Image 1 (cartoon, rainbow, N blue to C red):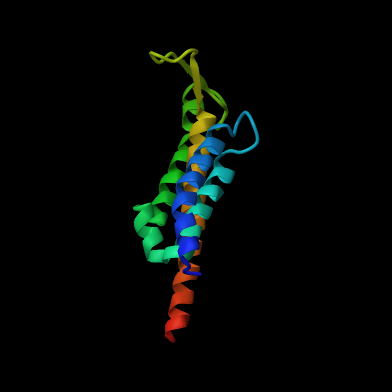
Image 2: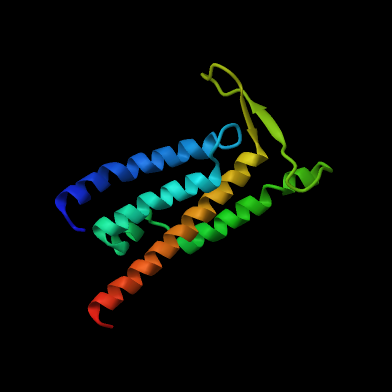
Length: 146
């Protein structure tokens, strides 16, 4: 699968898939989507890159060890419930604040569900990418006769 067309299209599709994954992440608690689906989309983009250029190139493109993404994602997702405990609510009860950034036409409501979704996004991206890289590594070792 190392054709020129496949590699060229992968270079266009990866940034597109990452952009769509972030859009799906941010619209998740109001529309279908969220951290899980967004993380799968991002991991699919990196899996495509791994098929086109090899898993080592995909790891270099990601720039972060997938195990670190899993840990950070789990920490953020689990920690997103702490603010509600601090104000006497149930764990993972959604809390929102309203921000009025200069230049925005209307206020932004930011809440703990978004932090949870970001944690899930990172966790799913890391786990799925780690699986893809592990499978590619075993395939590569099998092709070498090891």
